[in-house]
Structure formats: structure tokens, C-alpha cells
Amino acid sequence: MSLVFDLARGMLRRRRRQTLVSVLGVALGVAFFIAIAALMRGFHGFFISQVIDVAPHITIKDEPRHPSPQPAAVEFAGGAVAVRGIRPREAVRGIRAASEKLAILEAMPGVAAAPILTGQLLLRYGGREVAASVTGMEPARYARVSNLGKDMREGSLSDLLRTANGIVIGSGLSQRLGAGVGDSVVAVSPRGVSLTMRIVGIFHTGIATFDQGQAYTLLTTMQIAQDRPNVVNQIVIRLADVREAEPLARAIEARFGDRTESWEEQAANILTVFTIQNAIMYSVTGAILLVAAFGIYNIISTVVFEKTRDIAILKSLGFTERDIQRLFLLQGLFAGALGALAGFALGALMIEGLAQVRFGIATPGGQDGFILDRDWRIYAVAGVFAVAAAVLAAVIPARRAARLDPVQIVRGAG
Image (cartoon, rainbow, N blue to C red; front, side):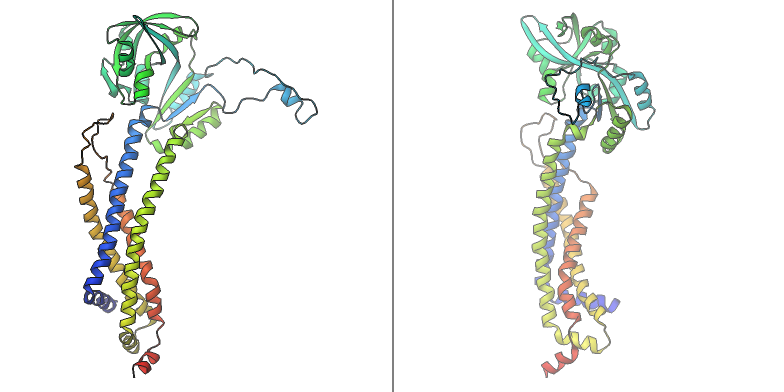
């Protein structure tokens, strides 16, 4: 095996220029793969942290996924009688046995849950009126399922406990109302209940639609404003591992019967964009590596053509077809491995170069440049892909070399 190894290395060394071109082709493919993957994964992680983490990972709602069929439709199913104009029953909204369900959820490892009541309130300050989506919650529990505490610019969630009818509003909502911390606003619910509420905090998430139309108050205060005592219409959940959201949501819905949505279901349309981005990334970088693989194929094919007499001599000395095939496969492996190592270094340099780029305009998340992911697994995938492409490119010429008949070669030379 060591002799085959030395022969493979020597054949590549004697064709240094062609070998260098092939190695550089593989290195460029690996480097571009690493740089593009770092950009894509970095943006993906930033999106999750800035958009998805604003909302809970799982939301249990006070509604079934599929509405119950009407009794008339069940009674006359498949019959000749058609029943039209039936109005659905006016069911009492709210999650039933919310405290029992909450206790079951909180007993699960890696799960934090909080009950909330959401609804619309019309906020009035002076001559301005702004409709806002207000969430009633318990500060201690809600702080475990959201990043709201970290997004507070003024005040804190605990100030809601120290102020009667306190409210926390978004920075955009504060600008629309023209009100700040310490000001009092009048909140009117669709049921006609009117409360005077005092602004005790302002948060800023960086998401304009959220900051301009969202507010928070105590759960009991919201229940009074909505005239829905002891009612919650959602249970929000945060997980230690965000990847477990979808299977856990399906298990919760099967157990409780309430509609349960994971963040993946709620953001399904947006996540499709990342699937398309990944497909484009793998297509582009795969094409570069494919071109580099053809270069390796060309080199090894040329070596096989030029070394036919040497192959005949090696076979006459006792080398088997497997040894000959291994000889040329090792050449492809060497070229792929050297290209991958050079690509790692070049890819790291490209990432550091991209990290220095500045746009001059800060994003809402506080970033003014490319967001890059330096995960080692990107390098591993690129290296495996490059080496596999190089070895596969060497398979055909290696098999051709192994099938050469030494007798015919010697006769032809004579």
C-alpha cells in the first residue's frame, strides 16, 4: 500500500502545473461554498433570533383546528335533503381548564408556559386615537417565554405589578400616540369598557409592525377591559430546543384538542425562502466543484493514456487490477484533499473579508454589515463534498487503467 501511495504522489508531482490548476479549482469551489453558506446560515440565525424569538415557540389557541360539523349536516349526511343558511353556534371563547393544562405543560422538561389574553383596545391620548393589540399576561411567567424583558428601553415588566392599570407599549406606538412613560392613556375595548391606563414602560424589538401596534398589561387588567373574567385565550410556550417545537405542538394538540401552532407553522411561508436560498447555494457551489472535478478527471485520464506502458510494467511485476485502480483513485483523493485544505484557508479569509464590509446603515437589529456563521460543520460539509467529487471523477479513468491488458500494450509498443 505504501508503494502505491508513493507512486500516486509521484505521478501528480511530475504534472505540477495541471495538478495545481485542478487543486485551485477545488479550492475555489470549497471557499465559495464556505463563504456563501456562512452568509446564508448567518442570516437564517439572525432571522430566527430577531423575528421568530419575538414570538413564543408554540401557541395554544382557544379554537379547534377543524370546526365541528353542524348537527343538521351530520343528520342528513349523504341524503337528498340539503340544509342551507345554518349559523354556527355562538360558543364561549376561552381555553377550558387552562390552569390544569398549564400545570401539565410546566411539568415537561425544557418547557416554559404562560397564559395570556389578547385583544384589541383603542388607546386615546389627547386628540390621538390608535388601535393596538394588547396582551394581558403575568410578568414573571411571560418573561420566561419571550424576549420582552431584554427589549425594554424604558421601565420594566415588573413595574406593571406596582402600578394600577399599568401598560407597556412599543416604541413605534409611543411615537404614534405622542405619549411616554408616566403619561396616562384611555383604553376602550370593543365591549365598551373604558379604563385609564398609565404607561410604565416602552420596548423596542426592531420589528416595525410589532413596535407600532403592540402593548402589554397585567392579565387581570386585560380581563377587566375585555369583560372576560378568569378567561385566557392563549397559552404560549417557549422551549429549550427550538427544533422540538413542531413535534411537541402536534403532541399537545392531540392531547388537549385545542389548535396548537409551532413557530414553524406560523412562519411556513417565510421559511420557504430559506429552502430556496439553500437550493440556490448548493446549485452554484456544486457547479463550481463539478467543473473542478472535470479538471481532475482530465488530468487522471491523461496520466492513464501517457502511462500505459508503465501500467503494463506494474502488472507484469505483480500489481493486481485492484492495485492499479487504487493507484489512480489515490491521485483523485490527493487532489481533492489538497483542494479542500486550500479551500478551508481561502474560505476563512473570505469570511473575514466579508466581516469587514459595512453598509453605513444600521439594521433594526443593530447590524450594519454581513451576519456570518462560522460553524465548523460548514467546513466539514464542504470538505466531504470536495473529496467525494474528486474521487468520483477519478473512478472512470481508474477503472479504465485497471482493465488494460499488459500483453496487448507490450505488443503494440513493439
